Image (cartoon, rainbow, N blue to C red; front, side, top):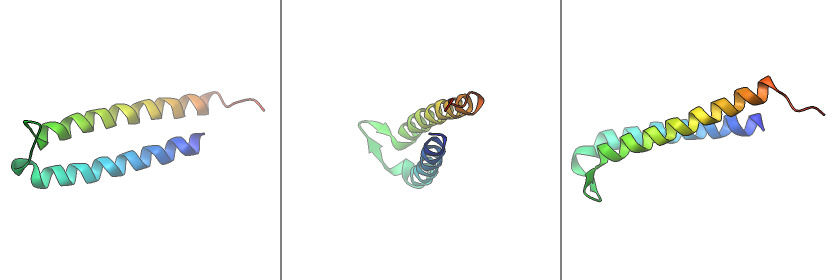
Length: 69
């Protein structure tokens, strides 16, 4: 389970990095649903950060209390 959590975290970090590069290069030119891409990038970054934080907490709890076999 902890390996899956780490893989998920790495994938989310990579997606956020690519998203921020794309948003930074085309943010002034693109409007989605009446909002600039910069506003959407902040929202997506916050949501991704919260997800990563929850994954980290789950990972740390799993390491602190390993399942008994």
